[in-house]
Image (cartoon, rainbow, N blue to C red; front, side, top):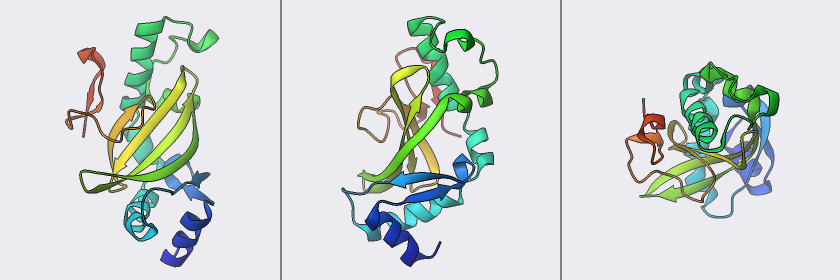
Length: 163
């Protein structure tokens, strides 16, 4: 997409095909930053591919494993506890929309998704649109208190570090 097409999509709140999710069209929302500020992060985000998603699997998988630990083995019904490979986690993630947010003067692309294992869903945040810096339940923040971690919880054994 050209810059003009991206500006138009952001302004209208259109769906944009996202390579990270196998070109699935995902709605963009923008009510907090200027379109001009968001463009570069969006262009970076659109360069991500399904290979990047698969490489990031350990982070949402850790979130899933933490929730199984906290809530028990029936989170996915018959499938609960059956996820043995991190890449399997994506079968239970449904992207809803993404938006832009600034944190520490850095632009973030923030994606909200439904997940089968938790009613509060999942948020994924990419700094500058290309570096995954946070996976968690949705709580309105774009980064972790400790920037070393992507998934971060009080149970250290589930925490995942940035690549």
